[in-house]
Image 1 (spheres, rainbow, N blue to C red):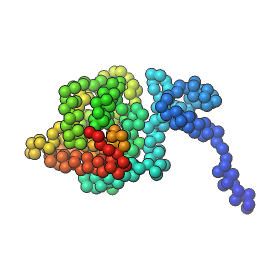
Image 2 (tube, helix red, strand yellow; image 1 turned 120 degrees about the vertical axis):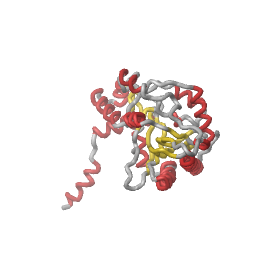
Image 3 (cartoon, one colour; image 1 turned 90 degrees about the vertical axis):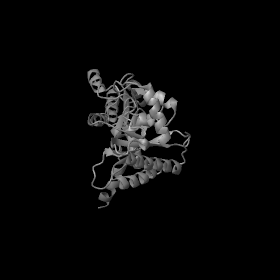
Image 4 (spheres, helix red, strand yellow; image 1 turned 135 degrees about the vertical axis):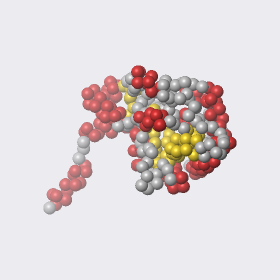
Length: 307
C-alpha cells in the first residue's frame, strides 16, 4: 500500500530526455530572441545530434513555435508561442483588458471581434470574442504572413518609417503599389482612427487560405495567378464613410482600429468583422465604437497615442 502511494511522486520526478531536449532548444532561442540559428550551430551549441535536432526543429516549426527562413535555413521563435503564452501568462495586462472590451463590442454588434499583433514575421490572433452560438470568423493562434499584401493595418498608424519598412518586405503575392491611393488611405484612417476594408468573395477565400502560409512558401506559378486576384495596396479600403451617400450601402468585410504601447507605437489591432452591406452611417457607428474601445485599452495598459 505504502509503495503504491509513493508511485505518483516518483512518476512526477521521472525525467524525459527527449522532452528535455525540446525545452533546451526553446530555452536557447528564447534567451537569444533577436537571433536565428542554423541546424549545425544549434546541434553543436546544445550538444544534440543533428538528426535529433532536425526532428525537434521540424516539429516545432510545423506547429508554429519556431519559424524557418527558407533563404538562410535558420530558425527563430514562432508566433504560436504567443497563443501559448496568452493562456499561461495571467499577468499579461493587455490580453484580459482587450478581451473585456471586445466582448462588449461582440454583444452590441453580434459579431466576432479579435485582437491581433505582429510577432516576428507573422501576424498572430491573440484574443477573440464571439456571441454564443455564432461561428467565429477567426481563431486564437491563427497566423498570417506579415508582408504585402497582408498587414497594412499593422503599420498604418505607426508612422512612415514603419509603413516603408513593411513595403520593403518581400511580398507573399505580386502586388501593385499605388502610392497616391496609399497616401490617401493613411490620411483618412489617421483622421478617423479606424480602417474599413472591403473584400470580394474571392479575396475573402484567399485571405483564409493565406492563414499559416509563410512568405516564399507558394510556388512561383501559383503566386502569379493568385496575385492577379489581389487589388493594389489600399484599394480594398473604403474611404469617407462619414460623408458618403446615405442611400448607398457598401459591402464591408471588417473594420480595424489600433491600440498603442507606452512609446506610442502600434501594439495590437482590434478587428470587428462585418461581412455584409452597411449604410455609411452604420459603418461610421461601428468604426467609432471600435476606435473608442482601442483608445480605452491603450489608456488602461498605460499606452499613449502620439499621432
